[in-house]
Length: 145
Length: 143
Image 1 (cartoon, each protein chain N blue to C red):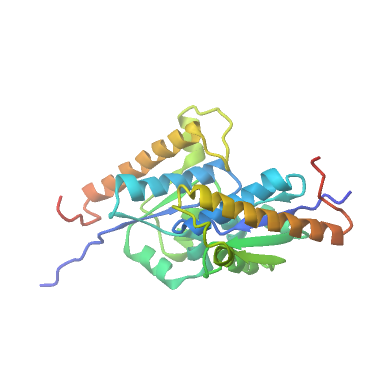
Image 2 (cartoon, rainbow over the protein chains, first blue to last red):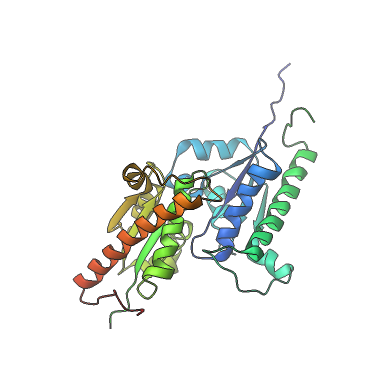
């Protein structure tokens, strides 16, 4: 009997948009998830590499559930995934989240301070919630849990 | 006055500290060194064919900064139909400044910040040259 093999990683693709503060937040939040919250489980996908046509990146995204993390409603990360690898499992629009959280401060794209750092932490926790949801749904195989 | 900007576009790769250096250098140029005549634009937006982003680059010069030899910024800008005027690789600078090694993606450290300064200074000069060529000097605009 052939056994079904489930993916053991979750791919997270941030837009990393250079021109917007929310783009910087996506980048920092995804690194936090990789390094601090879910190391070993989450793999970041590099949007520029993905768009440049690197076969490995696009193929990998076809084999694992992908969470797109976008800074604004233009949704570059989600649209790129859908275009080259298929539907995403979940997506986040950071600007919409900030509105939902009532964030009204002016944010910096280049010099993240305490406010931007805290928001990156909060977005990271949102990503973790989605990652854990995929694990709970059995879409990802997690060893030693 | 010619209000065309020079666009500086880093790869912003998520996996390498050198990509963070390119991003930092970009902000140094567009916010500190040449704020009036340089700007940046989201690479992803450009690559996915956003009309507003493409229109901005139509008549502009573009300088790309890549964090690794995959040259994603250069390739993606080329694919949008606008070949970069100048392309840089952070690794080329790192070869010349081996003591300025960046630390991590999230925190490039003192060495990374100094390396970004070196790259930003070069790009600021290139912008001045490009603007002089088109008869609209930029240097000193913010003085």
